[in-house]
Image: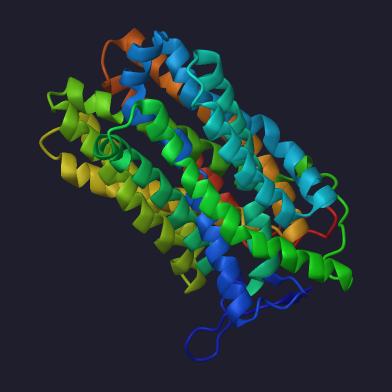
Length: 423
């Protein structure tokens, strides 16, 4: 294991830049570009099939006769899949290889999308679970792959990965309904159209499976043993807490942001546009945070600044939700997008190699997404008890305090590596 020091002007080594790099050389030009493109295309698929349901939820409920609670499962079930399956994913990667398993995730998403075409509520829910399972596996394996293959460029690749995730969510939120109108299709067919993006993922990722087969034939990329003791390591829990709290805040607010605005007097169309705008701005934040970290901005500074942005947005929505809405959405979108990519970056930086990164990714996403799945339910319950949105928004503001503490702890330059001496 070697280190890759970044140097400031004058030749001084930045202390938190002494990050371990896997011994394997970074991908050479053409192979590296193809791998980066493949990762970005896979990431585009990891939110679209879920987020596309939200703008069509009323239509789905009307057509299927589902209750509000049952319809809510269409967004809650994938999050439960993310959390419950995450600890099992590293074992799949070790058993079958990361690249083939990632290819299988695209097949799984295609299958789940096709199942949702069947005209029944059980098929709709079953297809959603299948899609959630495929996405859950890719969620965990991709950060480890980035650590393994882009050890010296993790900031840039984490930024591109996070940006692609946010872009997929923004596209699904913004163009699903217009796409259905343009194509004159019903909601089932419109949702199924996003499966075409998974087909593109299959095509783009297939060469990586052949590349892995060639590497295995030469003895490169042999099977690795699991990491022991990670669930007892304090650094792993700091990363996990930051991941979980930012996920809870994001998914809870995403579920109710349009309702918060319409209850304050905004039209439904304008409220939906605000959600799309927040997701679009999240793309910028998701890309910038890891890139700034790679350029020398300390992760602790980024964790603090992103929290301040998010806090300003939530405060604005609490005090003046309509009159200053564009300002609140700008800082909120940038803050939440940057916070998510910072959570992904902590998973990569606090792991000394790809093996640890995959295990830490599984742990952080297991707890993080299970917590996130409870977020919309809890926020809705607080709204119902309080009779308004002030108390729920203040509760989200309060959660930023432990999130910041966890972020500052995860930002320290040390590894979640129970098998190695503490730094």
